[in-house]
Length: 155
Image (cartoon, rainbow, N blue to C red; front, side, top):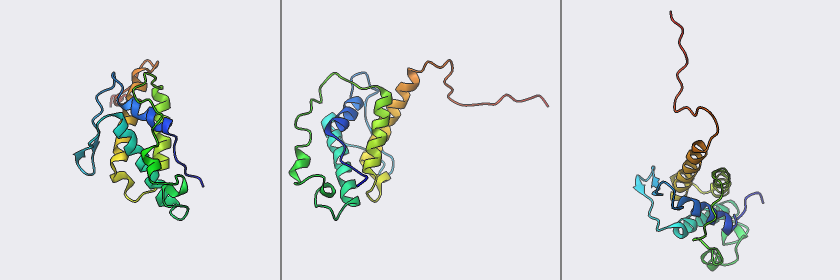
């Protein structure tokens, strides 16, 4: 098996980053469905992301078991996945780590038909954008360009 169920801590850290107090105000929008994604905080987001990972594993390994392609034994395991996680913790990982962790979770969740149409895809898209913007803001480069205009030689 090459796909796997991402750890609850991994998903929780992504959700915590999205809702950190200094963040831009996380209000993800599904550009395909043309509607706001209805989430009520980091726990809701984490559950959405977990379900995407579970659905992807089931799509990929449908013949290995009825829940998450055999990675979980019972449907209620999904409900209990985050039982020991403190979503209100103050620890926030670096934007570089979050960016990579989102890439990982995207890869582990993309096996469903219509992945780009899902709310989870778009929520992860906005989180990755926020991490990238924070990396740019923290950049030590002298110039971070918004656009590029080559110098034109006089004719």
